[in-house]
Image 1 (cartoon, one colour):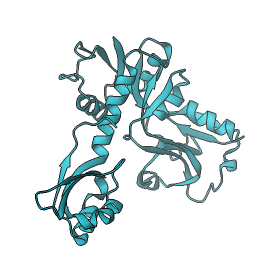
Image 2 (cartoon, rainbow, N blue to C red):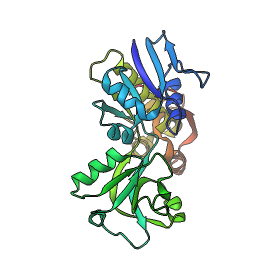
Image 3 (cartoon, helix red, strand yellow):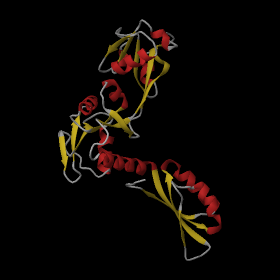
Image 4 (cartoon, rainbow, N blue to C red):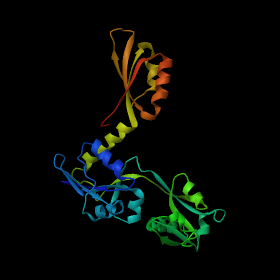
Length: 279
C-alpha cells in the first residue's frame, strides 16, 4: 500500500486535497481525520503538518508526499522532488529598511530574520555572505522594526506587506518555490500511477477541448491556430465542403483562439472542460 503524506492545513492543503480527489482518490470528509485508507486504489493518506512532510518521507516512514519546495529544502531531508504540481507558487527575497541595502554583499555581519533558517543559511553560504540568521516562526516582516534583525528573508508576493513595515526588496531571488511531489526513493510501488493521475489533473486544469466546423479548404490555416498536442482530429461532415475539428487548446487562450477561428471562417465553435487526461 502506497503511503502518502498530505498537508493538513495551510495554503497547500486545500488544493492538494482537491487534486487528489480529482485524480480519483478518497480524501477526508472531516478535517480532524489524520489517516484515510483508500483500499480501492491501494493507498493510505496521512494528514500532517506541512513542515513535517519532508522529514517523514525522507526517513522512509512514508513513501511520497505533497509539500512545498521551500519546505523540502529547508528540512535538509533526503527526500527527492519528483514532480512540480503547478500550484502554491511563491518567491523568496531579501528585504531591509528603505535605502539601507542595495546588494547581497551588504548583509555581511548583519542579522537576517526568517522562518526558513536552513534554506536562507544555505543560500548565504553559497553566495559567500557571512550573516547571522535569526529564526522566527512568524511575523518576520516585523523583525527589523522590533530590533530583532537588520534585514529579513521571506515570501514576497506584491511587496505591500513589506512596504507597510518600512522595508524594500533588494538582492537576488533566493528561491522560486511551488508545491511538489516528493518521494523517499524511486521505484516505489504505486508511485508512477500517482504521478500519471496528478499529471492528468494538471493537464485538465491547463487545457480545454474545442470543437468547431470549418470549410475544408481552410484546414491548414486553422491548424496553425489550433495545432493541438500532436495534431487536430478532423472528421468529414455530410456537406463534403465542411469538416469538423476537435483539438485541445490552452485554457488561458480560449477566447483569443475562438476569435481567430471565427474570423477565419469557423462556425459552431464549442468549448468543453476536460475532467481527466492521460497524455
